[in-house]
Image (cartoon, rainbow, N blue to C red):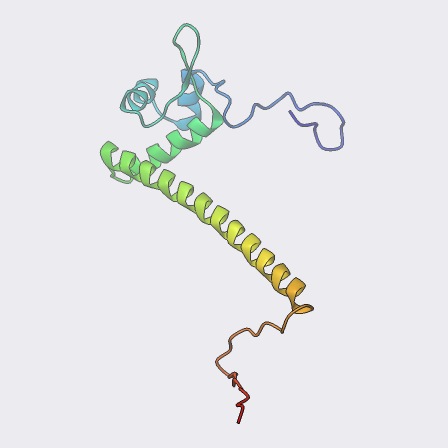
Length: 145
């Protein structure tokens, strides 16, 4: 846990977004859904709440937000299979965006490394010319007669 800003004490009032602490009745109240609907969504795999040792469901804040999203989608007329597919696609998009960010970081590091290598060699060898559509290079050769 991180200290509360400026107070120097721990923030014990709010659990993290992935901590399963809300019982099904509280989750139902927070989402506006019936507890039986939450059980159905759990059986269908749309949301996967944590479990207590006795098997009781415990929902995290992230689960609550997901349930609200499912409720909005079903209220707009999308069936549960459609909702499942939308959630899968959103998960794939998030994963792909993370991968793109990782690859962009690697590309920037490679560019920096290449730039440093070219700058280092510039003092020892002929200067490296970067190709440009407005410049041309002419090669001169001596001929011996």
